[in-house]
Image 1 (cartoon, one colour):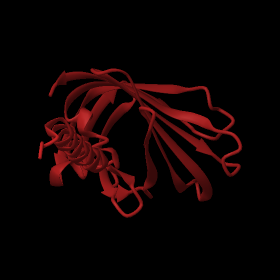
Image 2 (cartoon, one colour; image 1 turned 180 degrees about the vertical axis):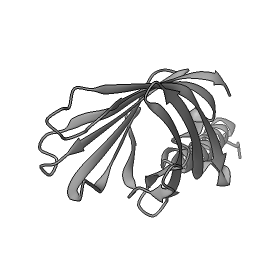
Image 3 (spheres, helix red, strand yellow; image 1 turned 180 degrees about the horizontal axis):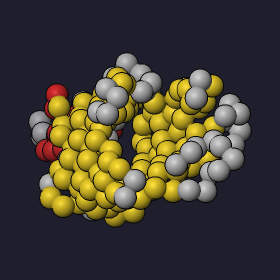
Length: 188
């Protein structure tokens, strides 16, 4: 009786290919679920910021300018991180933290801003990255009235990031941008 070596070799190689494909599929699932969405941002950045002086008001044309640094540190294997943000300009200073936490059950991130001046947490915005752009939204208040908040993160290049915040007073039908920050990498 002759052993069909070619058939055994082909079957063995096919099994190996299936095992290898399944293993790489599992690995990509573990990293593509969003847990590492902010891994690219770890390190120190030079920040330039424009802030609308009076958002959602009739005088929505005065922008304040700031410059400084932001430092991003990963926590818990990248499933959380903290951004230390320190900028200043002719109109004052902003010292803040941004705490980010990955929620695996919902496969989304929460971003919570902390203004060190008043020691208060803002309501979180929730979302994630799709096609390289992060979009996060939530509810807040401005001057005692309810508003919607949208926060966008994009990366024009590996060493540059853009952060844009907008408010809506009409339930998200129209948006007014009130925060524009451009970060350029200093070091990883």
